[in-house]
Image 1: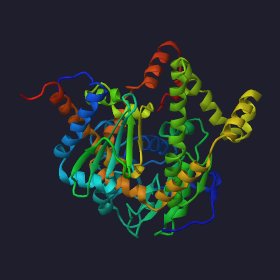
Image 2: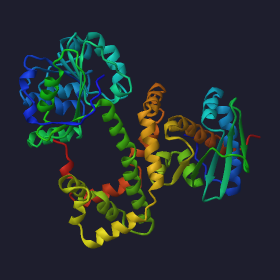
Image 3: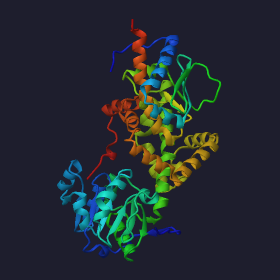
Length: 140
Length: 342
């Protein structure tokens, strides 16, 4: 686990998540992202406590993009507090327990596809840690 | 595979244990089901019971219990009756590689779950008898009910009768494992698999959701977490209510509760929006019966169990409800009735 950073404020958090999604696009193999695209093209990350909504977009070729506003179809959504996501990224919480306690809701994913979807969650966490690292300790 | 259309009940009078005389029984898998079934068979007088396992804790337990233990490939050729008591997702590979090539013509294969037969994951050779004895009881209960001479219900099926002698063997096995004192219902493996999965994937998650939601809402409103779980399940009152459903009837057990409880339950039940639940349950059953769930499970296994980590996270005890249980157990004597016995 990398050095823990404190959770960014709402505005900074949006930028860190934007960078997180970019990093997912480079950290996750293209073939895996193509499989994700078979399941969804638009995934909305919704952080209730911060009032932040950010969209993960992936096309059939596995190219990833990010948007803070989106008027098209949203295939799936993940809703939680930013603090839950941040704590999960740094090993102080986990998505499984958050789901059990109703602190994390996933919508729009067929239960029969959840196994595949789960493989996408961990890269988001590692990419977020990387993005936090870059945010707090920018390369000079 | 045979399709049995008319439900039929089996009782002790239908069974003649002589159908098991001089037959070597092999139990593949000495786990939650394998151990109680093997012990019950032996205590019923089935003299030749061998356990087939891989070296490890289950192997050691079987030895301690006094059974001869062999690797699967070594035990299978000597089986005239072989129980496949492996988890549904692992059984096909083991059956294909370590059991099927070694079975002798005319032997009997017994499954405790219809899953792999129903979805074509295991297709036993046509020269074998294929039976299903599927207890409707957890492993510890199988042993406990046998020892109390109460028995436990099962679904049973004669899926393939190559020898023409499958039926008496099915009845004798259902008796010897301890089921027929309670009774067994004859249904097909397909029906058993659909029933099992359907209830696990509808009532199971809804119950879990109801309990977790009540806990969450109650805690948020300031009710003590320990008191909530005591009320919800730790006291055993809920379990007694479920037992009363079995003993008295689903609706009759309501009369065991006071009027306020019955009235409150009735008006809240009437206010529930059940259409979406009906729709969801139908979809789940359709996905199960069409094999979509079995295919998803196959993919999960083939991909190296990607959902396992999420499941582990859910069950690792790092949650408020598990923590409240721990605190409660320190101060109250609870749950002894659930302790596993030999």
